[in-house]
Image (cartoon, rainbow, N blue to C red; front, side, top):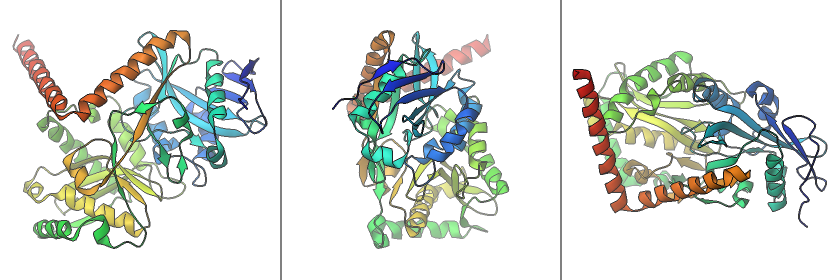
Length: 412
């Protein structure tokens, strides 16, 4: 039986109520302040509930404070509750005006690999199309709400449950996510072949000659700052060599990364964990990501500019990280979206992720359709080697033209 999504008079300017069956979404409220959302947020990010570590309050609060505010993004935190006002889910969204409409999308910008609401586990396990229809109806009934929902890079499943938002109309994301599946008790050769291990061990012997060579996980504030200082010194040079834009140079991003890496979780660890190879003289390689007891997901990395780079320190570090989490019983490791060659060396499967573009008002219909079409085109380019090469050449030509124009302007 379909849910009757009849809007009644809202109890506040940012709240819509619905007439629904018991146990279903009855109220959709928008919280426009991170601090106001924090108590509910932290309850729903407890390990027994259902969410990804990318949607932790500490991580997204740092991003919103340092990056989102500067970009003109306002918190648009969706809380759906039942008739007894018990929270059922929280969607950590931000509202931004683009193309003349108000677009709500997940907080975090380009930095999370996965986006998903935080659900009460029992709700997520039984959610169906009626719940999703009620959620959308509630959002459409909120005054001064969004015109478009742009919900990108969502996993079809997380751990042992399906993502209920996959019930919305959706399309494949621009990129898939390479993933390594770990089986408890399986031999080390199942995750990394013996021949690959031997090659890495041979390279590592060169690094082991460096004074104080070691693999570390940053646990103190001093460790974190020292490694991040090296990262922010090296990363711009690496990005420039690859003719890629340096997202870490964008306003507020450095402060966001530092704040999230320092944020201590109630369950232990940090909002972003840093792993590194280092010697007494330098940081040799660094990987940073989020972990939740089940999965480690990489966010950013770099490696030294010294001669030690000749010995594949990034691959050696990745091997160490995989073994570290496998020994702790983790079931998945991913290296972020994209098809870089080093990811294929470790990750044997591709995990599909999806986007949904939903018009919440008549004014949002055309922009939602246009955004979906642009994303499909980007995916087509990524999936076609010929189109991808053409796009890379065009990007390089534009960058060269931009550099030449800057040089002419400086000369004048």
